[in-house]
Image 1: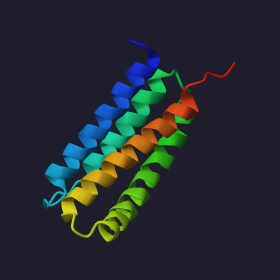
Image 2 (image 1 turned 120 degrees about the vertical axis):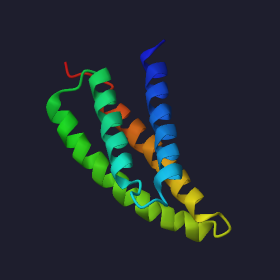
Image 3 (image 1 turned 90 degrees about the vertical axis):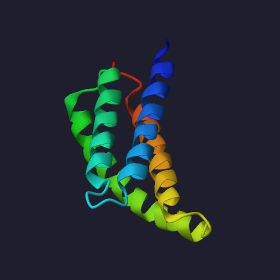
Image 4 (image 1 turned 180 degrees about the horizontal axis):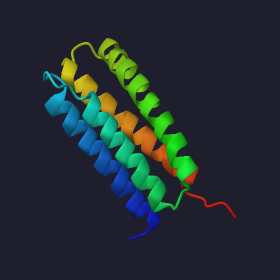
Length: 117
């Protein structure tokens, strides 16, 4: 399998895991924030390690991805609820977390895919 194929598998698998975690945990007392943050961190680490990125890149992108994921996820869900008011609330969160995970995953890929020479 090519590097791009493995990258697709990694990003889409984490997007699916995010969607399932959101669907199963969002309306519970525990909530989904902790699990989604851990999944985001795991995806960033896996992608960066797969492309042999340095530790400094991991730390910087982890902070950026965690904050961006939380901010875009919460505000994106509100935006989707306004755009599609007939959509049940939980599905706007599932859709948002899936899209944000895909966005973050591909953003990380485009940052780390080329090694420094």
